[in-house]
Amino acid sequence: MTTESGQPVEEVTTNAQGAWDVQVEQPGRFKVTLDTATLPQNVEIRGGNNVRTPTVYEGNCSSVLYALQAKGAAGQQQGDSGAGQSTFWAQAAQLTFEGLNLGLIIALAALGLSLIYGTTGLTNFAHGELVTLGAILTYMFNVGFGLHLIPAAVAGVILAGALGYGQDRFFWGQLRKRGTGTIAMMIISIGVAIFLRYIFLIFFSAQTESFAQYTAQPGIEIGPISAAPKNLVAMGIELAVLIVVGIALTRTRTGKAARAVADNPALAASSGINVDGVIRIVWTAGAAIAALAGVMLGLSQNLKYTMGQDILLLIFAGVTLGGLGTAFGALVGSLVVGLFIQVSTLWVPPELKSVGALAVLIIVLLVRPQGILGRRERIG
Image 1 (cartoon, rainbow, N blue to C red):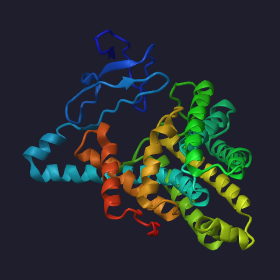
Image 2: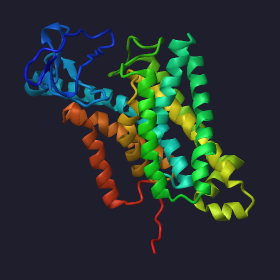
Image 3: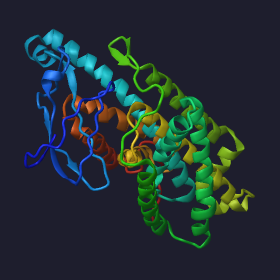
Image 4: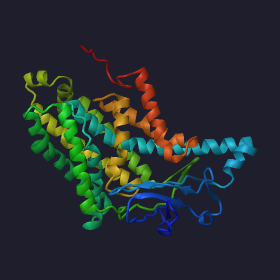
């Protein structure tokens, strides 16, 4: 790794998970070169470009990604149409699986954001920090206190839910009582996000970390798909949580009360529903679900203090695409976003993979402004 002017910075070797980390003394533009001679004999860089030029800003991390493929895969696609087509579909299957995995993680985070928006009208830009909070609390119990990852994750999610309750009880609820408008609260949430992000930086540092368990697992082959067992278990947990929350919203009294508050808070209050109590339950559940999303995101990649900020735009894209304020819409929209992010790397460089998802968001909203599962509203 060198500076933009060619001054050497550091030469590093990736760990067993293929991750590496370099600390730079000052922000700026850098040149990262991957030594292709160190790659396994049957692996090459997709596209052949082994140079990246990331820009590092003060107080932030910058990620550098290299897409790898089996050596000769590109040539097979050009020279042998049958083999090339087979390789293409194998890559498409693998990327579809990875897209579903990412989409379910985004869906967990988007579900909490959608529930909070539906009951309070707040567009919470600090929701990404709730995702980071869950990962950091779990890391604290796991690495700091020596708990196994599973009980550490349970403790982290419960504590994050309690902090979500306290956040509404002592902060957002007080702002609502004072009659603070939703636009003002949205701007306040941006300040809260920045505040929490730098609190995480102070206590967690800018280093990337990983959980003590399940960091490196050999993949198992399922047809053309290679998947680590932890990803399969994580996807099962994510689906189970999404199904349970969906059933709770439609079948339980609390879920029906939450939907009533989302539809018309004044009418819900006149019907005897404790609106503030319902909102606090939603905040507790939303924070806990976002924390679980952070744990799952930390399992699939390294932990860092900006991990929630990095996927916040994708969370908003999933919620908006599915339909603001609708829990099932957040699930559908997030799956679409996750799939397009990963599958689009078949045609575009990995650095531009988020562009495809955002392009789909724009196209869908041009045709259906209320989102996929959103309802039309009369204006005026």
